[in-house]
Image 1 (cartoon, rainbow, N blue to C red):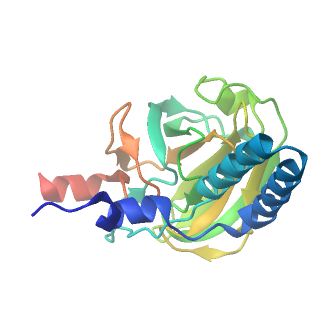
Image 2: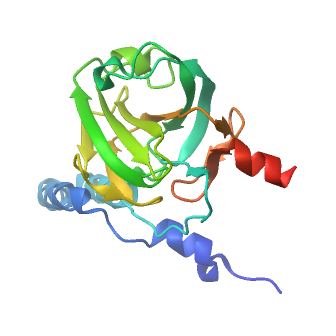
Amino acid sequence: MASSEGSDPEFKSLVISPLHPAGVPILFGFAVGALILFWIWTPLGWIGAGLTAWCAYFFRNPDRVTPTGDGLVISPADGRVQSIGPQVPPEELGLGPDTLTRISVFMNVFNVHVNRIPLGGVIRDIKYRPGLFLNATLDKASDDNERNAMLIETAAGDNLVVVQIAGLVARRIVCEIAVGDTVVTGQPLGLIRFGSRLDVYLPPGMHPDVQLGQTMIAGETVLARADTIESKES
């Protein structure tokens, strides 16, 4: 049976979804600006209306269905897998010089920008560090760009690191969690405006379950899993 695009639930969730609270004042500003432009010159007003619609689209916060199961790490961001490999976690978290497997997910300006908790636990540390605004696709952006690093102690007692990284256009990192918070997998943790990157450093015993270039859906795509899960499935 053929279905029209307008009746497709996925299409509706893409176009019609709740607005993240951080976007409300910005959307209001865009709307006021559009009205002023209409008053100045109608064609300019239509440009302002288009930008207002894009702003609402950027700050959309669609519902997500998070997979359940022990040992699953879920993608914290929409976008594409930019890199996978061993890297030293951010020095400000004090985890030492040993490398961990890092998975980087790059978000462009058209992706949903609400970030989510990849694995539940307790937030043990959050460190913000100012920096540059290099293109987030560059590997050195993880070291040089403005960032917000979070350390999650999982239920198994492991340390998992999530880092929000500003990009070329991004100028504002929003973090909605605090040290001591108990968080669950898939829970919103904040967002970055406008186009950026998230790095996840896996604890030992976790292995990536994605490939370079793979499209991620925050709160839904399995990013990595515990070795014990792999052995049970093989």
